[in-house]
Amino acid sequence: MMFSYSEKSLRKLMNGFMLSEYEAKVYLSLVGCEPLTVAEISRLSMVPRSKCYDVLRSLEAKGLVSHTSLKPLRYQALPVRVAVENRVNQLVKEFNDRRMMIEDVGRELEMMLRNMDSRRVEAQLLKDSRVIFQSLMLDILNAKDEVLIAKSKSPVILEDHCRRVIDVLKRGVKIKLLVHSIQLFMDRVLEMEDLKKYLNNQLQIGSTDLVQQPFSIIDEEITYIFFTDIARREFLFAIRVEDRVFAKQMKTMFELLWGRRLIMQY
Image (tube, rainbow, N blue to C red; front, side, top):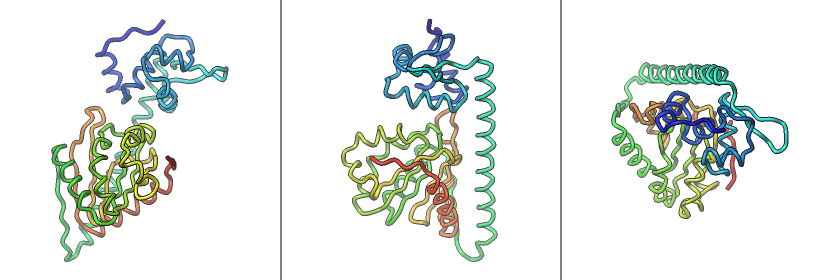
């Protein structure tokens, strides 16, 4: 028998455990049940079966569910107390990792300021989500050679702006994009016929869970560092730095992450 829940409970679980809607629905479909097959989970949760596999793998990684070795494969929710402890420990680690990333960026900024000598560095603090996206897209649309974007697991959506970069690709600009969940991202991208022809050529996409602080580098000159609120699903603010030395340092960080990416061919 499926655990009964309200829309309010679903949203509280999503915000408290930092889960997507599909993850929350699948998890709640397993609470209080015997081990279920993927087909049964899909039917109870109303999540498409094709999506359930990735969702279940994600929930296992987050310490909320486990699977049996029997065939067909069955999944069950871990005891609530165990699941809470697992998720808290994971979120604490993610917070500490993000803090370290922010501190690293801060040290880079301090070093840049100490070494700037007579060169002129332009830095802007962008606070409004609309202003952030307008500024970023303007710089991307004006790019001449290369755009690098490292996206964290933050739910802030960049996919909706994919269509606007087609003109950039037509001009020969190369774009490298690191995302946390490549399958969810590619589902959106593959719907765009004009964009698909650039995949694995000018447009390269890789997956990694190592990005704690999203950032972007444009033409090895302009750098954006984004600060997000995962629970509220929005940007808090962004820093835009126009300086080649800093951009080069951030590109080195991007290339290290790119070297450890999961490669997907489409």
